Image (cartoon, rainbow, N blue to C red):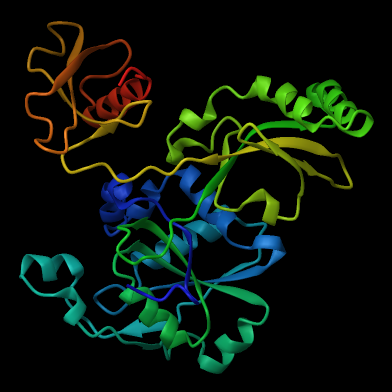
Length: 362
């Protein structure tokens, strides 16, 4: 476990939810599979209150950053309007990976992790990093944080307090998982929103009735909180790890689970409602989906599916902490082939998970 006094985790996801992605990014071109919504969230995590950012990729077990550098470049390319620099500052001694340690029965905590400055990186040294840290946030980037020893070693080598972005976190480091927020309703003082914007403005400025304004705007909240975290950033559901109350916009009121904010600019104003994206505990071993009530379940398609039946019969089993899923069948779900291509296994699984997430009976 690392000390949380200096190192701050500003973006991550429960490892069980992004396990496949964390492995994929290690392969050539794997960074291209990082969802745009996730890049948006990582980009939003840096540069709070206009601060400039330096991204530093953490070297892998071979001593050099490769896929972590790809993640850094992806974040910067997605946020061209932000002042984001990338410095390939660190190198390390080759060592066994965490996975190799576990396979070989070794204690990963017994491996010494030491980083040094990369002498070929424009002569970057501790003095330059210290100077940069006065006007830039120094943000370390890795694919997974487990015990936190690697991130702590990287911060120690740089010699300045750092923030940390990872795709996934096992929770073993003790660093708290960052909260996510997303805008569910936005009304701008222009175009088709203008009349509703004026109605909300009147409720606030004339009547001082913030709760009525929140109720009025919530009519356009079509259940974004039921979306997966990784899919929040579409059709206006913008998920960010930055609390809008700390982003410089004016927080007006909180009620009914919403935060009402006002963004003022020289061009036009806007009111918007924000909710916190609920973080869920990782699924227990064997589970592969979660219902709308958060119940872990295991699902499987039956053999008699596909072309012959025009779809898939899906068996759903609920989880019992004493004996897992065996013998605890709860429901059957039918997925018609017209709704999903049964030949695309991954697409089918994702579709089934979404259908199960709509179940609210258990």
